[in-house]
Image (cartoon, rainbow, N blue to C red):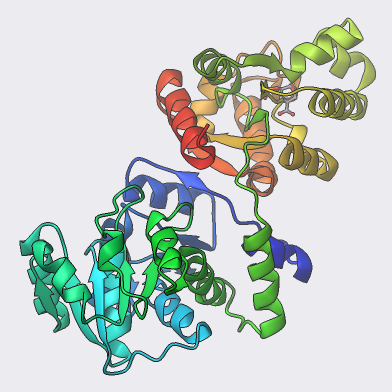
Length: 419
Ligand code: S3P
Protein backbone atom coordinates (compact mmCIF):
# COMPACT_ATOMS: atom_id res chain seq x y z
CA UNK A 1 0.00 0.00 0.00
CA UNK A 2 2.62 2.49 1.07
CA UNK A 3 5.21 1.61 -1.54
CA UNK A 4 2.65 1.71 -4.33
CA UNK A 5 1.71 5.25 -3.38
CA UNK A 6 5.32 6.38 -2.84
CA UNK A 7 6.10 5.08 -6.32
CA UNK A 8 3.11 6.73 -7.92
CA UNK A 9 3.95 10.08 -6.29
CA UNK A 10 7.65 9.73 -7.12
CA UNK A 11 8.63 10.02 -3.45
CA UNK A 12 12.03 8.82 -2.35
CA UNK A 13 10.55 6.73 0.45
CA UNK A 14 10.26 3.04 1.19
CA UNK A 15 8.16 0.98 3.60
CA UNK A 16 9.86 -2.15 4.89
CA UNK A 17 9.27 -4.80 7.53
CA UNK A 18 11.35 -5.06 10.64
CA UNK A 19 11.29 -8.17 12.79
CA UNK A 20 12.37 -7.81 16.40
CA UNK A 21 12.16 -9.70 19.68
CA UNK A 22 10.95 -6.75 21.73
CA UNK A 23 9.45 -3.29 21.21
CA UNK A 24 12.70 -1.81 22.54
CA UNK A 25 14.79 -3.69 19.95
CA UNK A 26 12.49 -2.48 17.17
CA UNK A 27 12.69 1.09 18.40
CA UNK A 28 16.49 0.98 18.74
CA UNK A 29 16.79 -0.17 15.12
CA UNK A 30 14.25 2.42 14.01
CA UNK A 31 16.39 5.14 15.58
CA UNK A 32 19.70 3.81 14.24
CA UNK A 33 18.37 3.47 10.72
CA UNK A 34 17.02 7.00 10.79
CA UNK A 35 13.51 6.02 9.79
CA UNK A 36 10.72 8.61 9.79
CA UNK A 37 7.77 6.49 10.81
CA UNK A 38 6.80 2.98 11.84
CA UNK A 39 3.70 0.87 12.24
CA UNK A 40 3.67 -1.50 15.17
CA UNK A 41 1.77 -4.73 15.35
CA UNK A 42 0.94 -7.36 17.97
CA UNK A 43 2.34 -8.07 20.48
CA UNK A 44 4.27 -4.78 20.81
CA UNK A 45 1.56 -2.10 20.73
CA UNK A 46 1.35 -1.67 24.50
CA UNK A 47 5.10 -1.86 25.15
CA UNK A 48 5.80 0.61 22.34
CA UNK A 49 3.41 3.14 23.89
CA UNK A 50 5.56 3.13 27.05
CA UNK A 51 8.64 4.08 25.01
CA UNK A 52 7.14 7.19 23.39
CA UNK A 53 7.86 10.79 24.38
CA UNK A 54 4.29 11.79 23.56
CA UNK A 55 1.03 9.94 22.97
CA UNK A 56 -2.10 11.26 21.30
CA UNK A 57 -5.33 11.00 23.28
CA UNK A 58 -6.79 7.88 21.60
CA UNK A 59 -3.58 5.90 22.05
CA UNK A 60 -3.50 6.87 25.74
CA UNK A 61 -7.07 5.69 26.19
CA UNK A 62 -6.57 2.53 24.11
CA UNK A 63 -3.26 1.90 25.85
CA UNK A 64 -1.27 1.10 22.72
CA UNK A 65 0.21 2.60 19.59
CA UNK A 66 0.30 1.21 16.08
CA UNK A 67 1.93 4.28 14.55
CA UNK A 68 5.17 5.94 15.61
CA UNK A 69 6.37 9.20 14.10
CA UNK A 70 9.65 10.99 14.61
CA UNK A 71 8.99 14.68 15.18
CA UNK A 72 12.29 16.48 15.61
CA UNK A 73 13.88 14.89 18.67
CA UNK A 74 10.58 13.49 19.92
CA UNK A 75 8.87 10.20 19.27
CA UNK A 76 5.11 10.55 19.05
CA UNK A 77 2.76 7.57 19.28
CA UNK A 78 -0.65 7.37 17.61
CA UNK A 79 -3.33 4.76 17.28
CA UNK A 80 -4.96 4.50 13.88
CA UNK A 81 -6.52 1.08 14.53
CA UNK A 82 -9.64 2.72 15.90
CA UNK A 83 -9.80 4.97 12.84
CA UNK A 84 -9.58 1.78 10.79
CA UNK A 85 -12.72 0.48 12.50
CA UNK A 86 -14.69 3.71 12.07
CA UNK A 87 -13.39 4.15 8.50
CA UNK A 88 -14.45 0.60 7.58
CA UNK A 89 -17.94 1.16 9.03
CA UNK A 90 -18.33 4.47 7.20
CA UNK A 91 -17.11 3.03 3.90
CA UNK A 92 -19.63 0.19 4.34
CA UNK A 93 -22.42 2.76 4.93
CA UNK A 94 -23.05 1.40 8.42
CA UNK A 95 -24.35 3.70 11.16
CA UNK A 96 -24.00 2.13 14.57
CA UNK A 97 -25.27 4.98 16.73
CA UNK A 98 -27.40 3.51 19.56
CA UNK A 99 -26.98 0.01 18.10
CA UNK A 100 -25.93 -3.04 20.12
CA UNK A 101 -22.40 -4.12 19.23
CA UNK A 102 -20.24 -6.95 20.55
CA UNK A 103 -16.47 -6.88 20.51
CA UNK A 104 -14.86 -10.28 20.86
CA UNK A 105 -11.41 -10.20 22.46
CA UNK A 106 -9.71 -7.44 24.37
CA UNK A 107 -6.13 -7.30 23.09
CA UNK A 108 -4.82 -4.26 21.23
CA UNK A 109 -7.27 -4.57 18.33
CA UNK A 110 -10.20 -5.24 20.68
CA UNK A 111 -9.42 -2.17 22.75
CA UNK A 112 -9.24 -0.03 19.60
CA UNK A 113 -12.55 -1.45 18.34
CA UNK A 114 -14.30 -0.72 21.66
CA UNK A 115 -12.95 2.84 21.62
CA UNK A 116 -14.09 3.42 18.01
CA UNK A 117 -17.59 2.07 18.64
CA UNK A 118 -18.12 4.09 21.80
CA UNK A 119 -16.93 7.23 20.01
CA UNK A 120 -19.60 6.59 17.38
CA UNK A 121 -22.34 6.29 20.00
CA UNK A 122 -22.82 2.51 19.92
CA UNK A 123 -23.93 0.39 22.90
CA UNK A 124 -20.93 -1.86 23.38
CA UNK A 125 -20.44 -5.18 25.14
CA UNK A 126 -17.01 -6.74 25.27
CA UNK A 127 -16.72 -10.52 25.50
CA UNK A 128 -13.46 -12.16 26.41
CA UNK A 129 -12.49 -15.68 27.37
CA UNK A 130 -10.71 -14.40 30.52
CA UNK A 131 -13.64 -12.56 32.09
CA UNK A 132 -11.52 -10.41 34.44
CA UNK A 133 -9.72 -8.82 31.48
CA UNK A 134 -12.98 -8.07 29.70
CA UNK A 135 -14.33 -6.57 32.91
CA UNK A 136 -11.28 -4.37 33.33
CA UNK A 137 -11.54 -3.07 29.76
CA UNK A 138 -15.27 -2.46 30.14
CA UNK A 139 -14.74 -0.40 33.27
CA UNK A 140 -11.91 1.62 31.67
CA UNK A 141 -13.89 2.40 28.55
CA UNK A 142 -17.33 2.67 30.12
CA UNK A 143 -19.07 -0.22 28.36
CA UNK A 144 -20.55 -3.58 29.35
CA UNK A 145 -19.18 -7.08 29.52
CA UNK A 146 -20.69 -10.57 29.82
CA UNK A 147 -19.27 -14.02 30.49
CA UNK A 148 -17.92 -15.91 27.50
CA UNK A 149 -20.59 -18.59 27.97
CA UNK A 150 -23.25 -15.93 27.33
CA UNK A 151 -21.90 -15.11 23.87
CA UNK A 152 -24.63 -17.08 22.08
CA UNK A 153 -27.36 -15.33 24.06
CA UNK A 154 -26.01 -11.84 23.54
CA UNK A 155 -25.48 -12.36 19.82
CA UNK A 156 -29.25 -12.79 19.52
CA UNK A 157 -29.73 -9.09 20.23
CA UNK A 158 -26.57 -7.81 18.56
CA UNK A 159 -26.45 -5.84 15.32
CA UNK A 160 -22.69 -5.71 14.83
CA UNK A 161 -20.09 -8.27 15.88
CA UNK A 162 -16.41 -7.38 15.68
CA UNK A 163 -14.06 -10.28 16.25
CA UNK A 164 -10.50 -9.41 17.16
CA UNK A 165 -9.43 -12.91 18.15
CA UNK A 166 -6.17 -14.33 16.82
CA UNK A 167 -6.07 -16.20 13.57
CA UNK A 168 -7.30 -19.76 14.10
CA UNK A 169 -9.48 -19.00 17.15
CA UNK A 170 -13.09 -19.05 16.08
CA UNK A 171 -15.60 -19.78 18.86
CA UNK A 172 -18.71 -18.40 17.08
CA UNK A 173 -20.90 -21.27 15.92
CA UNK A 174 -22.76 -20.93 12.63
CA UNK A 175 -26.16 -21.38 14.31
CA UNK A 176 -25.50 -18.36 16.55
CA UNK A 177 -25.24 -16.07 13.54
CA UNK A 178 -28.54 -14.51 12.47
CA UNK A 179 -28.92 -12.98 9.00
CA UNK A 180 -29.26 -9.37 10.16
CA UNK A 181 -25.99 -9.49 12.10
CA UNK A 182 -23.18 -7.46 10.55
CA UNK A 183 -19.95 -9.40 10.96
CA UNK A 184 -16.58 -7.70 11.01
CA UNK A 185 -13.43 -9.79 11.44
CA UNK A 186 -10.01 -8.26 12.12
CA UNK A 187 -8.26 -11.20 10.45
CA UNK A 188 -7.19 -10.29 6.97
CA UNK A 189 -5.77 -13.57 5.74
CA UNK A 190 -8.25 -16.39 6.22
CA UNK A 191 -11.48 -15.86 8.14
CA UNK A 192 -13.75 -18.85 8.82
CA UNK A 193 -16.06 -16.43 10.67
CA UNK A 194 -16.61 -14.34 7.54
CA UNK A 195 -17.23 -17.53 5.54
CA UNK A 196 -19.94 -18.62 8.00
CA UNK A 197 -21.50 -15.16 8.01
CA UNK A 198 -21.63 -15.07 4.21
CA UNK A 199 -23.36 -18.46 4.19
CA UNK A 200 -26.00 -16.98 6.49
CA UNK A 201 -26.47 -14.00 4.18
CA UNK A 202 -24.99 -11.47 6.63
CA UNK A 203 -23.31 -8.22 5.63
CA UNK A 204 -19.61 -8.56 6.31
CA UNK A 205 -16.65 -6.25 6.69
CA UNK A 206 -13.32 -7.87 6.10
CA UNK A 207 -10.08 -7.43 8.00
CA UNK A 208 -8.58 -6.23 4.74
CA UNK A 209 -10.86 -3.18 4.89
CA UNK A 210 -9.70 -2.51 8.46
CA UNK A 211 -6.07 -2.87 7.36
CA UNK A 212 -6.66 -0.39 4.56
CA UNK A 213 -8.57 2.13 6.65
CA UNK A 214 -5.94 2.19 9.40
CA UNK A 215 -3.20 2.65 6.81
CA UNK A 216 -4.67 5.89 5.37
CA UNK A 217 -4.27 7.93 8.58
CA UNK A 218 -0.91 6.25 9.29
CA UNK A 219 0.30 7.49 5.89
CA UNK A 220 -0.95 10.96 6.76
CA UNK A 221 0.90 10.93 10.09
CA UNK A 222 4.11 9.68 8.46
CA UNK A 223 4.17 12.24 5.67
CA UNK A 224 2.12 15.15 7.03
CA UNK A 225 0.11 15.05 3.78
CA UNK A 226 -3.66 14.59 3.55
CA UNK A 227 -4.74 11.74 1.28
CA UNK A 228 -7.33 12.38 -1.41
CA UNK A 229 -9.64 9.80 -2.99
CA UNK A 230 -7.29 9.25 -5.94
CA UNK A 231 -4.37 8.40 -3.64
CA UNK A 232 -6.53 6.22 -1.39
CA UNK A 233 -7.53 4.25 -4.46
CA UNK A 234 -3.88 3.58 -5.31
CA UNK A 235 -3.34 2.13 -1.82
CA UNK A 236 -6.55 0.13 -2.04
CA UNK A 237 -5.71 -1.33 -5.45
CA UNK A 238 -2.22 -2.20 -4.21
CA UNK A 239 -3.63 -4.07 -1.21
CA UNK A 240 -6.16 -5.96 -3.28
CA UNK A 241 -3.63 -7.00 -5.88
CA UNK A 242 -0.92 -7.90 -3.31
CA UNK A 243 0.18 -11.49 -3.61
CA UNK A 244 1.20 -13.30 -0.46
CA UNK A 245 3.37 -15.62 -2.45
CA UNK A 246 6.89 -16.63 -1.56
CA UNK A 247 9.07 -15.28 -4.39
CA UNK A 248 11.26 -18.38 -4.63
CA UNK A 249 14.66 -17.03 -3.64
CA UNK A 250 15.96 -15.23 -0.58
CA UNK A 251 18.72 -12.66 -0.94
CA UNK A 252 20.70 -11.54 2.05
CA UNK A 253 21.94 -8.00 1.71
CA UNK A 254 23.91 -5.86 4.14
CA UNK A 255 27.27 -4.37 4.90
CA UNK A 256 30.53 -6.32 4.77
CA UNK A 257 30.73 -8.42 7.93
CA UNK A 258 27.00 -8.38 8.62
CA UNK A 259 26.97 -12.19 8.49
CA UNK A 260 25.35 -12.90 5.11
CA UNK A 261 27.44 -15.95 4.24
CA UNK A 262 27.43 -17.58 7.67
CA UNK A 263 23.72 -16.96 8.22
CA UNK A 264 22.83 -17.84 4.62
CA UNK A 265 24.43 -21.28 4.86
CA UNK A 266 22.48 -22.07 8.03
CA UNK A 267 19.15 -20.95 6.54
CA UNK A 268 19.88 -22.99 3.41
CA UNK A 269 20.33 -26.10 5.53
CA UNK A 270 17.23 -25.42 7.62
CA UNK A 271 14.98 -24.77 4.64
CA UNK A 272 16.59 -27.33 2.37
CA UNK A 273 17.64 -24.67 -0.10
CA UNK A 274 21.00 -24.14 -1.80
CA UNK A 275 23.29 -21.27 -0.78
CA UNK A 276 25.28 -19.19 -3.28
CA UNK A 277 27.63 -16.30 -2.55
CA UNK A 278 27.63 -13.76 -5.40
CA UNK A 279 31.34 -13.03 -4.79
CA UNK A 280 32.15 -16.73 -5.36
CA UNK A 281 30.31 -16.61 -8.68
CA UNK A 282 32.21 -13.49 -9.70
CA UNK A 283 35.55 -15.08 -8.83
CA UNK A 284 34.68 -18.20 -10.81
CA UNK A 285 33.48 -16.23 -13.82
CA UNK A 286 36.53 -13.99 -13.92
CA UNK A 287 38.99 -16.67 -12.74
CA UNK A 288 40.43 -14.05 -10.40
CA UNK A 289 40.05 -13.20 -6.74
CA UNK A 290 37.84 -10.26 -5.72
CA UNK A 291 41.01 -8.43 -4.70
CA UNK A 292 42.61 -9.02 -8.12
CA UNK A 293 39.52 -7.81 -9.94
CA UNK A 294 39.50 -4.59 -7.93
CA UNK A 295 43.26 -4.06 -8.34
CA UNK A 296 43.59 -4.97 -12.01
CA UNK A 297 40.24 -3.99 -13.52
CA UNK A 298 38.88 -1.42 -11.06
CA UNK A 299 35.64 -1.10 -9.07
CA UNK A 300 33.45 -0.09 -12.06
CA UNK A 301 34.35 -3.29 -13.85
CA UNK A 302 33.64 -5.32 -10.69
CA UNK A 303 30.19 -3.67 -10.41
CA UNK A 304 29.38 -4.56 -14.05
CA UNK A 305 30.24 -8.21 -13.46
CA UNK A 306 28.35 -8.19 -10.16
CA UNK A 307 25.18 -6.92 -11.87
CA UNK A 308 25.51 -9.40 -14.74
CA UNK A 309 25.98 -12.32 -12.34
CA UNK A 310 22.98 -11.27 -10.23
CA UNK A 311 20.73 -10.93 -13.27
CA UNK A 312 21.77 -14.26 -14.67
CA UNK A 313 21.29 -16.03 -11.35
CA UNK A 314 17.98 -14.54 -10.30
CA UNK A 315 16.46 -14.95 -13.74
CA UNK A 316 17.32 -18.62 -13.95
CA UNK A 317 17.14 -20.02 -10.43
CA UNK A 318 14.59 -20.79 -7.77
CA UNK A 319 14.95 -21.90 -4.15
CA UNK A 320 18.37 -20.42 -3.60
CA UNK A 321 19.59 -18.30 -0.71
CA UNK A 322 21.93 -15.65 -2.09
CA UNK A 323 24.60 -14.02 0.00
CA UNK A 324 25.07 -10.74 -1.87
CA UNK A 325 28.19 -8.60 -1.93
CA UNK A 326 27.78 -5.55 0.32
CA UNK A 327 27.79 -3.11 -2.61
CA UNK A 328 25.24 -4.90 -4.80
CA UNK A 329 22.49 -2.52 -3.68
CA UNK A 330 24.23 0.61 -5.00
CA UNK A 331 22.69 0.16 -8.46
CA UNK A 332 18.98 0.72 -8.75
CA UNK A 333 18.58 -2.00 -11.37
CA UNK A 334 20.02 -4.51 -8.89
CA UNK A 335 17.68 -3.35 -6.13
CA UNK A 336 14.66 -3.76 -8.41
CA UNK A 337 15.82 -7.19 -9.49
CA UNK A 338 16.36 -8.30 -5.90
CA UNK A 339 12.84 -7.16 -5.05
CA UNK A 340 11.13 -8.76 -8.02
CA UNK A 341 12.92 -12.10 -7.99
CA UNK A 342 13.67 -12.70 -4.33
CA UNK A 343 12.82 -11.77 -0.80
CA UNK A 344 15.58 -9.27 0.05
CA UNK A 345 16.49 -9.52 3.73
CA UNK A 346 18.75 -6.86 5.16
CA UNK A 347 21.05 -8.16 7.89
CA UNK A 348 21.85 -5.17 10.02
CA UNK A 349 24.83 -5.15 12.33
CA UNK A 350 26.42 -2.02 13.77
CA UNK A 351 29.56 -0.66 12.12
CA UNK A 352 31.66 -1.86 15.08
CA UNK A 353 30.33 -5.42 14.87
CA UNK A 354 30.67 -5.47 11.07
CA UNK A 355 34.28 -4.36 11.28
CA UNK A 356 35.26 -7.00 13.78
CA UNK A 357 33.73 -9.68 11.55
CA UNK A 358 34.92 -8.49 8.12
CA UNK A 359 38.15 -10.29 7.21
CA UNK A 360 40.36 -7.92 5.14
CA UNK A 361 41.25 -10.48 2.41
CA UNK A 362 38.13 -10.06 0.24
CA UNK A 363 37.43 -6.42 1.17
CA UNK A 364 39.82 -4.25 -0.85
CA UNK A 365 37.54 -1.26 -0.28
CA UNK A 366 38.65 -1.24 3.37
CA UNK A 367 42.42 -1.49 2.76
CA UNK A 368 44.72 0.59 4.95
CA UNK A 369 45.87 0.85 8.55
CA UNK A 370 43.28 0.48 11.28
CA UNK A 371 42.45 4.20 11.35
CA UNK A 372 41.96 4.28 7.56
CA UNK A 373 39.92 1.10 7.69
CA UNK A 374 37.56 2.59 10.28
CA UNK A 375 37.11 5.82 8.40
CA UNK A 376 36.58 4.14 4.98
CA UNK A 377 34.09 1.71 6.48
CA UNK A 378 32.25 4.48 8.37
CA UNK A 379 31.81 6.51 5.19
CA UNK A 380 30.57 3.55 3.12
CA UNK A 381 28.31 2.39 5.97
CA UNK A 382 26.52 5.74 6.15
CA UNK A 383 26.34 6.20 2.38
CA UNK A 384 24.71 2.82 1.99
CA UNK A 385 22.06 2.86 4.71
CA UNK A 386 19.44 4.27 2.34
CA UNK A 387 20.30 1.74 -0.38
CA UNK A 388 19.89 -1.19 1.97
CA UNK A 389 16.70 0.31 3.32
CA UNK A 390 15.24 0.87 -0.15
CA UNK A 391 16.11 -2.64 -1.32
CA UNK A 392 14.85 -4.48 1.75
CA UNK A 393 11.55 -6.21 2.33
CA UNK A 394 12.60 -7.52 5.72
CA UNK A 395 15.15 -6.22 8.21
CA UNK A 396 16.72 -8.33 10.93
CA UNK A 397 19.41 -7.40 13.41
CA UNK A 398 22.36 -9.73 12.95
CA UNK A 399 24.17 -8.70 16.12
CA UNK A 400 23.46 -12.07 17.76
CA UNK A 401 24.90 -15.47 16.94
CA UNK A 402 24.42 -16.55 13.31
CA UNK A 403 22.21 -19.45 14.42
CA UNK A 404 19.83 -17.07 16.22
CA UNK A 405 19.67 -14.69 13.24
CA UNK A 406 19.02 -17.58 10.85
CA UNK A 407 16.19 -18.87 13.00
CA UNK A 408 14.58 -15.41 13.10
CA UNK A 409 14.66 -15.22 9.30
CA UNK A 410 13.23 -18.71 8.95
CA UNK A 411 10.39 -17.88 11.28
CA UNK A 412 9.60 -14.71 9.33
CA UNK A 413 9.63 -16.49 5.99
CA UNK A 414 7.29 -19.16 7.32
CA UNK A 415 4.99 -16.64 8.96
CA UNK A 416 4.73 -14.37 5.95
CA UNK A 417 4.27 -16.97 3.28
CA UNK A 418 3.01 -20.03 5.18
CA UNK A 419 6.09 -21.71 3.72
C1 S3P B 1 31.93 -5.17 -1.26
C2 S3P B 1 31.66 -6.24 -0.41
C3 S3P B 1 32.32 -7.56 -0.56
C4 S3P B 1 32.80 -7.75 -1.99
C5 S3P B 1 33.62 -6.60 -2.42
C6 S3P B 1 32.86 -5.28 -2.40
C7 S3P B 1 31.24 -3.88 -1.01
O1 S3P B 1 31.39 -8.58 -0.22
O2 S3P B 1 31.72 -7.90 -2.86
O3 S3P B 1 34.75 -6.52 -1.61
O4 S3P B 1 31.27 -3.03 -1.90
O5 S3P B 1 30.63 -3.73 0.08
P1 S3P B 1 30.89 -8.85 1.30
O6 S3P B 1 29.79 -7.89 1.60
O7 S3P B 1 30.41 -10.26 1.27
O8 S3P B 1 32.04 -8.64 2.19
